Image (tube, rainbow, N blue to C red; front, side, top):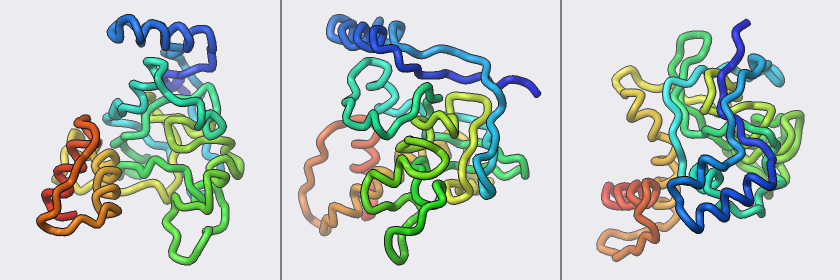
Length: 220
């Protein structure tokens, strides 16, 4: 079988520290120092029943990915990542059965074979962050930070059926790859419970911030 091409982020403290320092001096050069490499990996194996191989068509570059490559991420969530891992959690790709899908990136209780934390729980829900390190997968907040699953910056990775959402035929790949960040923004807009006529402050004008504004204007 052909090897999987992947961009792998490794635990190399010296290079990460150098990246963080370089970011303070010039952001343009900093990512070149990041502990990221192009690698040939063995094809992924399915952890248990209910998993599928996904072959990415497009994978987004999230702000969290950029922060990691610039040495700007908090180490608070290190316990919820397993290195080395393949980045990429905003993905549109193909399954072996021909379906084109996007993924819900979070590796929640359903993907990990853990019991639902409460009645009506969504597949990604849990009582606390502890469920994001449970089961046979090892630690991983989401696809793109879990060694076992791989991520979208590759030619293949694995995802649980609870993460998969089929893409309508009339939706382009370029639009589909925006589903995950747009869903994050819509979730925030819904939780804000804004009434018509309210004035809202959105902190940050990046892609998520702009999607939040769009969601609020559309009446999420």
